[in-house]
Image (cartoon, rainbow, N blue to C red; front, top):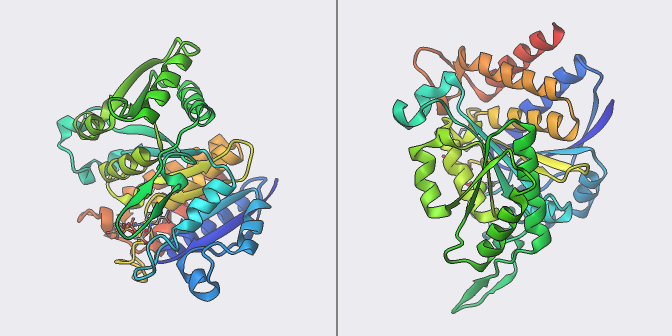
Length: 354
Ligand code: NAI
Ligand code: MG
């Protein structure tokens, strides 16, 4: 099975964590039918400084013609706001990646790094955020003038239907009992459209319970009873914010993975963190968010559920032996990005050999 994987390393810690992702993919190729060809597609702040474009046409061509994109993170302090980051929005819009899948799972080994007391963690945290990824405020309709600025939050029926449908199907496929929709229907018209579609579609899924929660209330419920959520579907900006909140519950922003997906088309996989300029170049970034994004790629784009599960197992094995500094435990070795990536790759190799 030959797959072309476009690679955008980006800025800051992006290249450091993506290199570990490439290493993991090479291990998979060594022990499966996969053959991967990697093609670099530069995007972000560094390439903008060189070319004046954050997503050069050549890079986008490479991405469009690949089977999947592995993306690091972009953003350089001091550049005009949004210059580098606009590349992500161009990729999401240009490839119509309407699903942003963001799993938030607290591994047992990391219960000590969760900021919540044990009674609030309860039976554990295993939530998948399904974030709408192409509409809403991030469509970037609006203007910026000296005295005022405007962003338009636009949602279409088709846009709401396809993401909510995906969330219901995801919950069904994964044996979840409930789908939670997060909105602000007491204020926003876009949320009122969203909510009516969420309920109209519920009748097609009689085995799934449904609930609505306002975004402000959800922010407190997420830390008060995180164990009570399974699939959570929400609009673009709410999803951006609550998934960062969720990522901290599992120990570190560096742990959280994501897929920007259009089923059957080229999709993009990236850790949810940014370029982390405060730690860039130090070799201490946690690569797990990227490695778990490779897991999502293998499962969602290439349909190999079992190999993806082994990646997750390899990550869990490693957490009991050593950690990067963001999730450190004094009883375990503190590892660099590279050492953590090596250890997880070797654990995966052992598992795939069997
Ligand atoms: P950030 O996610 O880069 O960093 C927030 C905090 O988390 C920092 O203290 C950082 O050191 C820590 N952190 C992030 N990733 C980590 C990792 N892998 N291991 C250990 N610690 C980690 O967010 P920030 O500082 O708000 O943004 C920095 C730049 O990244 C900005 O230019 C922003 O626009 C951009 N950004 C890019 C994203 C992307 O490429 N998808 C997403 C979010 C932000
Ligand atoms: Mg974010």
